[in-house]
Each structure stands twice: as C-alpha cells, then as structure tokens.
Image (cartoon, rainbow, N blue to C red; front, side, top):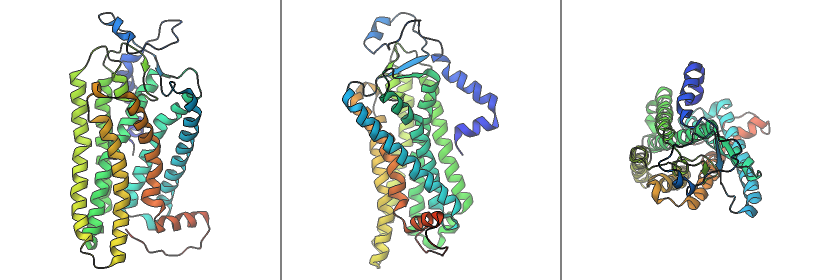
Length: 361
C-alpha cells in the first residue's frame, strides 16, 4: 500500500528514472581530499561562484554535545526497537485475528505501518552517526530519507482526520456504523490518505532537490527538508510558498475536521445516561486526542513557519521527539490498553484458549 513500493513494482524503470531526476541536482562528487563539510557561514564566500553538486552530506546532529551522544544512542535504540516491536505486533494481530477486522483496526494497521517506515527512514542513520566520527550520508540516501519522512508524516496527518471521522460515526451513529464504514469506504479512505501524503511529499522533495546548495554540512541529525534548505545559495520564495500551501492542506484543515468530529462526539457522550458507556467512549476519544495533540503540536511548530525563523537546536529536539517517541507511543495509547488487543496477543502466543471476546468497536 505504500507509494514507493507500488511504484517500484508496477514500473521499475519509472522508479529508476524518478530517482535519477530527483537526485540529479546533488549527484556529482566532492573534490578529492575534501573530508569535511562546508557550513552555512562558509557558503557566503561562494555566492556568485559556480555551486558544487554534492555527492556526500555531513550531518552535524548532536556533535556539539559529545557526552550526550551515548545517552541519545541508547535512548533512540530502545525507542526504535520498541516502536518496531509494538507496531509490528499490532499489524500481525489485526491480520490474524478475525475479531479485529473492524475499520478502527484497519486504520490502526495503516498507522502502525507508517510509523515503522517513518522511523526506519531516519533512526538507523542517527544510530550509526551517534557512534561515528564521520557523520555522513550520500546524496541519494539523503533524498530518499527526505521523501519518506515527508510522505509518512503527511499521510499520517490525513489518516488521523479519517480516524476521527471513524470515531464520530461509531459513537454518534452506532446502528449504521458498519453500513457507513464498510470495507470499500474504509479502503478508499486509507488509499486517499496514502495518495495525498505521497504526492505532496513528491512535490516538496522534487522542488527542494532542484535548489542549488552552497554547503554540505546539514545542521540536523537527518535530512530534514528545512535543514537542507538552509544550505541554499539563495532564498526561494517559490519553495517557501509550496511548503506553506502543503502545510495548510495537511495540518490546519485535518485539524479542523478533527475538531468538528469531536464537537459532535462530545455532544453525544454527554447525552449518554450510562456511566460505563461514557467512560468507554471517553477512553477511546482520549487515546486518539492524546496522539493528535502530540503529533500535530510537533508538526505545527516545525512546518508552519518560514525557514528564516527556525531555531535549529529546538527543531532537532522536536524532531527527535516527533520521530522516535510518537511512533513508539501510538500502539500503546491506541491499542495495547484495549482488552480485545490484549486477548488477541494472548491468543497469538497460545496463553489462553480460543474463545469469543466482546469489546468496543
């Protein structure tokens, strides 16, 4: 279901040509003997001269804090492994357990797959560079990292709005839930989320990689698009406008839809006479809202501002939280506290006999 995977399978030659076109502005090499990056200040000396086409980039990461690098390595490794384990387990049980064939778990499975792809695009490079003296990445790897991070993050923005609508239908119109949220509708919603995320990421990445760069020292631990654009030889109003338009499309609009959904949900919950029913509904909504606030809070702080106003040190901290902690917490907040999921995990491990368990949608 991923954009990159489908492109590679359906048209291998197109996949190769696409990468060639995207990476062309960065593909030649460094001059022989050049083993250090050129920073933002040094690039000013290159204004008016022919810019270099870089084949290697240096990631500054957290090298200013060498004593913290081992701590950050352990923290990131534990979070990454936990993310892989939690999200992979959730995907596996939603496939194998027939009781979890509901729309909510279909969307959660997609969300878990996104989180695995998102973290795998950047965290392995971070882990290697935290223990390495040469914190480098090749230009093609940098471009792929930039695209995957944008694609997975953008897709998740749309999917969170879709999941809010799913909760709205489940709570506000439960008798017609499986009629409205049938398999075809759910598949279409998931597909639209992926298409919007992948296409907007392709637009941003393709424009970003055409901008001439006057340095190859990225003040970040990953090829984050804003950090790369700081190396541009000249400011690009067009690129700023594209990023602003995409950010508005993928951040405030889905947030507005989420808010509208939860206004109706809250109104319905307050009319529920049963305390147990209210607690059950609040629990489901609370889990979703927690992730929404964490996810959108980090994303809004990073992308709804022009590059000239960024504080890179703060952005690196936010990116680490955004890229490691949120994907790890998603399966815990959403599902691992759910009785159905716990029983499905026990059944998978053979710890309880097969029996029918009733739970919420």
